[in-house]
Amino acid sequence: MSDLVSVITPSYKSEKFIAQTIESVLAQTYKNWEMIIVDDVSSDNSNKIIEKYINKDSRIKLIKLEINSGPAIARNRAIKEAKGRYIAFLDADDLWKAEKLEKQIDFMNKSNLSFTYSSYDLIDEEDNDLGSFKTKDKITYDELLKTNSIGCLTAIYDTERLGKIYMPNILKRQDYGLWLKILKKINKTQGIVEPLATYRILKNSVSSNKLKAAKYQWKIYREVENINIFKSLYYFIHYTYNGLKKYKGD
Image (cartoon, rainbow, N blue to C red):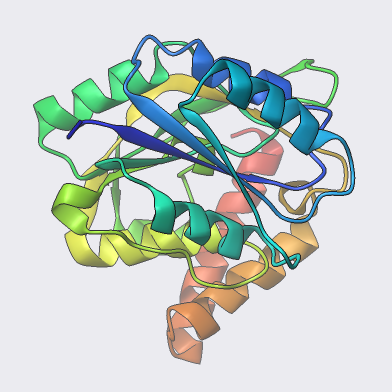
């Protein structure tokens, strides 16, 4: 099972969307996967929903944390338990297109890539279409510092070539911290411009709060990447400029 894909899904009070998320994995045309869901001490009915799927499909696994620890620790626990060659990420409110894994694993193999990503569509909590995010076909470490063009729900990395790499233990933007870790190793990579996933924008999410997002971006520069204040300011200016371009629809 050298081409097994381990799907990493943190879950916290996800009863509203978790069934849709699991269904999108079950619908994959690429069948060689395991889905590791890590519950972060939810108080709703999400675990009951997950357990119903586990009873139907042994590829789905549930790990229950004893202390509420946040998405970084939840994802890292799943990575630790993962048996797959490939590590893929899918949050408990997002969705994959049916051919996502098949197209992306094939792209990685044919292009000899250890880390890839794709564009993705956007929806709200009521499944209304909000357009799409078009990523870049190529990204370097330096470019990633200026703006994060990699959606967590699209990223896959190859443990056979990179080993297991874990997310930094910070409250937010830990996925971005992981992409930077990986690109420090390989310097550059390529992605698929076609949308292969669907990202759900939630009310009051960090991604919808520009001020909070900026705060965590700065934290990445200074505390995770340990970049000096002058270079941090340089990259932060680029981050702000790119954010304004997106806001204006450019």
